[in-house]
Image 1 (cartoon, helix red, strand yellow):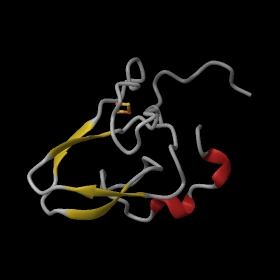
Image 2 (image 1 turned 180 degrees about the vertical axis):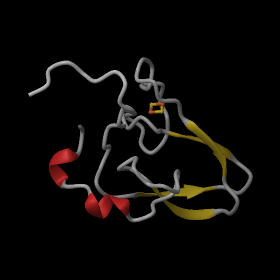
Image 3 (image 1 turned 120 degrees about the vertical axis):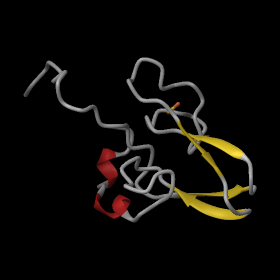
Image 4 (image 1 turned 180 degrees about the horizontal axis):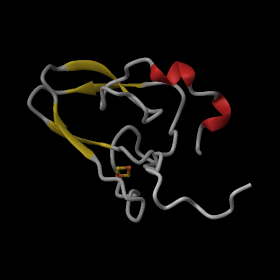
Length: 95
Ligand code: FES
């Protein structure tokens, strides 16, 4: 076991959930997507990223309607789900 975090390794975000979250977006509106995974207001930033090295990802919705946003925080197409959560086991949620 390595008790000391490896400071040179890129930190991984916390897995907020191992499935995406459906939200209703409004076209033209700006949103702050939580990239650190620690927000209590998923999938949006609530300021909990302080000290994590992560910052929220600002994006403007292109269309109004339901969108599936990434909650495993490992999508390559953030803020949107790209299916990566299928490789994230349930025991990683919250870690
Ligand atoms: S709370 Fe996660 S990026 Fe702000």
